[in-house]
Every structure is written in C-alpha cells, then in structure tokens.
Figure 1: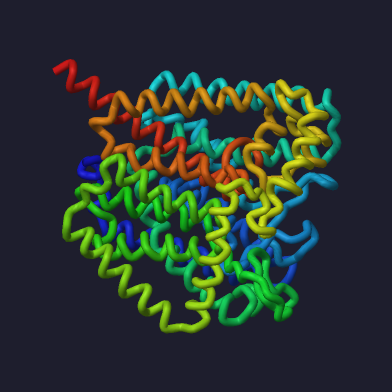
Figure 2: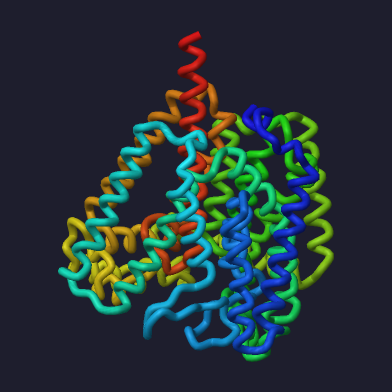
Amino acid sequence: MLLSHIDLNNFRQLYKELFLLFVFLCLSVFFLYFIPIPLNKYSFLLLLPLVVYSKKDYFWLAYIFLILNQPGGLFYGGEANDSFRFPLYSLTAGFSFGLEEIVLLILLFKAIKLKKDKNNVHPDYFRWLNYFFILFICLVVITPVLGADMASFRYIKKAIIYLSVSFTLLYNFSKNDFERMLAILLPFSIFALFFQLYSLANQHQFVHLIRPEILYTQGEFNTRNMDIVERPIEMTEILFINFVASLYFLKQQILPFNRSFLIFIHIISYIAIFMTATRSWFLALTLGYIFSFMIGFGSLKLNTIKAFLVTSLMLLSVLFLNPKIASQVESASIRLSTIQSVVKGDITAEGTLQRYDVRAPKVIEGIKGSSIILGAAFSTQFLEHDDFHVGFHNMFLNFGLVGIVMALFFFFSLLIKAHNLKKYIHIWGMLFVALIMLLIINSGTQTLGFNVTLPSRYILQAIIIVFLLKLISFSFLISKTKRSC
C-alpha cells in the first residue's frame, strides 16, 4: 500500500502539527477580534516569516483552507473597510491583497524557487495542465476586448492567485505532503458538527458571540418563526475532504489515526453534510459511497465494516436523543426527497429550487451575449451574469465551448488511463471517486473551473485533481517498473 513507503508512522510529529494548527486558528481569532484596531490587521503579518522559512508548506495550505471555510462564521469576509474581516492590505485605491492571498503567493514563489521533482505527474497530464494554462491566458487576453473594468482586473488578480495553488501542489507537494495535510484536517469535521449543533440550538452562528451584529454568514435559520427548512451550513469543503480522506486512509496499511477514529470522522462528515439539506452535496456523497464500493472499497475487512455499523448506530442514537436534531434530520430528509421530483421532470423541485428556472436563464442570457467559443472570459459581461449556483452553465459563460470540450476530454483521458491501471485502484480509486463527486456537486454550485467567487472551492478542486494526477502517475510508474523487471 502507498502509505507503507512514507513517514506517516511518525505519529508524534503528526499530532504536534495538528495541535499547532489548532493553536494558530485560536491565535487568529484572538488577533482579529480581541486586539485593538488597527493593530489587529498588522499583527497577522507576524505569520509571514513563519510561512517563508517553513519546510512544511502543506501545514500553511491547510491553515488557509480552514480560514476560508469560515468555521462558525469566523473570519467572515465582509466589506473591504470592515475592521473585523480577515486582513486586507491595500496597495492602491480599489486594489488589495488579502492575507490568505499573500500566503498563497509566498507558497507559489517557494514552489518556483525549489521546483522539486516531488513524484511529478505523467507527461500526458503535464500537457493537459499546459493546455488549461494557455486557455486561462487566452481568457485574460480577450477580457479587455470583450469589455472590462476595474472589477474585471481584480477578479483576474484573484483568479491568478488561486490558480497558482495547482502549481504549488504540483511542484512542491509530494504524496507524503498531501497525506499529512489530509491527516491534520481530519479532526476538524468534529468542529464542523459542533458549530452546526450550536447554530441549530441558538438560531445564530458562533461568530454572533463575538460580533453581535452578525447572526449568520451562511445557511438559513428560522429566526422569524417561518415555516422553512433550517440549513446549518458549516465548513462543507472540509467535510468533503474528510469524507474522502477517511475512506482513502482506511485502505492503507499505516494509518494516521486508529481505524475507529477514521470511521467516526467519516460518518460525522456524512451526517454533517446531510444536515445542511444541500441536495447536490448529499447526492454526491451518497453516490460516492456507491462508486467506492463499485471500484473495490467494499473489500474492507469485516471488522472494519462491523465498526462502521456500530459507530453509525451509536452516533445516530446519541444525536437523535436531542429533539432539535431529530427535527432537523426530518426537515432535511423532506427537502432532500424533492430530488425525486427533479428526476421526474419538475425543475423547481416542488417549488423549493430556483436554480434552473430562475438562475439558469440569467446565465444563458450572458452566454448568448458572449463570444460563445471562449465565453465571456472575465469581462463585465461575465461579472454581470455570473452565478455560481448553476455550475455547468457558469463554466460555459466563463470559458465557452473550447473550455467545456477541453474539460470533457481531460476527464475521459483520466478515465482511460485509470482503466488501464485498474490493478492499482487501491492507490488512486478514492480520489477518482472524489472527482466524480465534484462533477455532481458542480451540477448545483460551481466547484470546477476558474470561478473564484468561493475561493475554498477552488482549493478543494486543486487538491483533489493534482493529488489524483500524482497517484495515477505513481501507479503508472509502478506498472512500468514491474514490466521492465
């Protein structure tokens, strides 16, 4: 198995990194909310030397990923002049860099400087990555031709920074780095569930304790005694990563945590997504189970399957003892059941969905006014019609027919290569399932492409795709080595 070749059995070091990650998050809360203005903004600059001289870039990417997930509504962006938003440093009027963007740029420069051969990807995939890079350059070039303003150039700046995450992962992250990053993120599913339960009990997110003017930054709560389905949305990208990573680790010989803990994390990640009542995410994770068993993850040891069942029953029993949670599960089930109506042709999902009859027509209108071949790029036309709630429509609006065709060919090339390496499915299988899950989610909110309206989604996309490419390439190398022996 893959993990038998790396140093993940250095558990003490791993737990130290996990503890430090939690400490840095707590310090970030303290710096942002409890240090006087404007010192709170500049205190974060103390982190930058640590990032520059660190030899563990995966740690800092995990830190930024957690910050962008806004646990409990903390680190909420807000307006540029909001003194309690995650730090924003202005260069000129209307042109600023967030602390998270500065950290990502530092990681990029380190990757360019080092450019280590960290088990890089197969040449075929390098070509594909180059094609997508050329596509992005073309979109940037035609943006002024299609009509651009300052907002367009700010969007391009942001897209370049988050696009750089893929380069950083490609050149500066080994398989070991990926796995250590995934391992230190695993326990944060517990925090996500805690924040969900807190918001359901109190009708506001945790951030309200610190900033009373903010009830919640995402999700829906019945604050006006209306008949709505409450949706405690918390750290969804972290939950997705941990859902995938826990299954991935369960198939390895050396585990970062004991098997029972991995099962526990896996189950609460699924339950937490279920409680958000978000249809595309629930469907993706449920089908993810089916696909993972189809590709051989059903070969888990009998003791592991028993532990799955026992842990599930115990966890559900504890949760259902709380009437509020039982009510939320019932409400979420009712909302999720409307998926059947969509399958039968009701695009409004019994009046609960505006994605295809309200939001999609606006994006289609933007597509009609675009270049079609390369879409609307990052022009004012794109920004006026951009709606990440309709993922595939928005991708077409952004990079047009060329981009869509390229994405499809890329996916099918991965599929063909994976099929030829099915003997090594235990190495890359779960990451391929994760990519399929992202495609399902993208049928709702955009999770793929160059859209950086939700930056945490782009980092999620980059982690899944680059790690998958590395694992498939690693499998190809093993296969080639065995054939030559």
